[in-house]
Length: 288
Image (cartoon, rainbow, N blue to C red):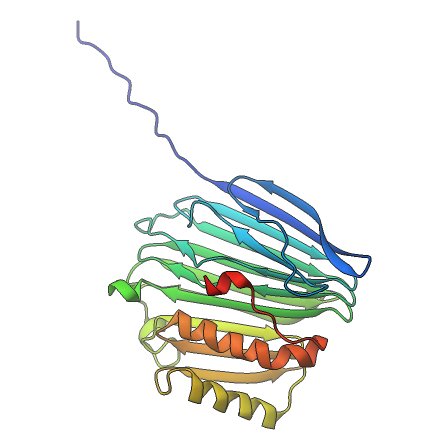
């Protein structure tokens, strides 16, 4: 008799993690009043390098997204609160050999009237062969203030590894009281025309978007552009600063996510006092 063997079942390990944070003003100080997590996504205790603004660091212990992983982050900032959210290191989307299933990070931010949220994560590194969806949805009420930046590096330039296969979809949507202020969707395919073309990335591997709810003048933007061009490795990248209604928007295109992050930090330091009348206080984690 011929023995019959059943094939071992395929074991798929997907990490679907979620984190919900809520901030509210308590006796003149913003407190983290809600912290609900599921899976490997959480925060350290709140930090207060400023008297009334709550700083928190998002932690994702696995360090990156593999096939089928999904992160969902929800942040609610109540009226008159001040919250700053960052990460201790770069996020990563690992290669999955062009599998059809996406690796997803979905961020939902809600800012109430008179509140301010500063969403300042470090960059996301998209490995060759990844299939990434990076989505940010932001809801602002009347008088709500926002600082938001998003930085993406394609491939691993430090290891001379390029992004020549896979794809990354980046989506940013900002609304105020239900009215769209900004809707963007970028699709970068490894080895595609967008990477090499002058109308796309122009052969560069890193791009970034900085957004602030602040009105700036043309001369002010020109001064900020000159500061960036003279301070951050002159001649190796491009900066673009524009005003779209109530949104100040800065763009980076180049070959260094660290240069992008440093430039955005300089913009934040220069403009934050104009938005909330407080000097920028960098999270300590950025210096470690």
